[in-house]
Image (cartoon, rainbow, N blue to C red; front, side):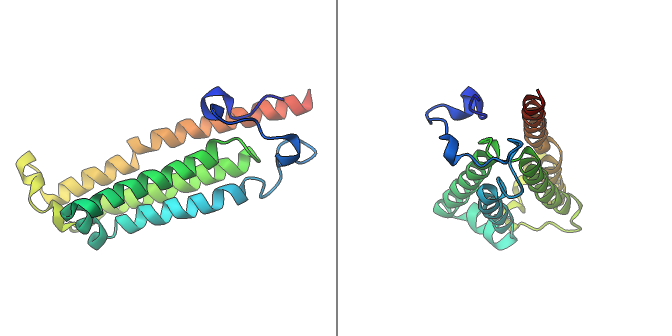
Length: 175
């Protein structure tokens, strides 16, 4: 059986030995086969995203360069941990799909909250949008809409990729 991650995602790492792969008799992975490897990255990436969108934390990041870089590195690092766990190909595709959908749902919720907030939440954006002919509330709504809609494209791509991978596994076990 070839490594599930494919050449893009498995470059630089050896395939797992058979005794280290989490599989059931069907070869599809069992409940929790992926959950153990994705739960912590999911929780961490979700917490990091939401914490940095608390108005006090966000404003602190935009008014202090070192805090800004802590924000950027923590957002990028936690997202990389999550996507690496999801795309590694270990465990049941259904589990992995569930985490991708949950991650998109929580980011979409945050985007929707920003889009439909009745007031501007971030003091750091009090004046900058005015130069673009937007109010701070319009700027925030646009940012939320971007988080909500176009940012869903990578989640959709990952969902299709994982579903195709699961379908291929299922067909291979039935053949």
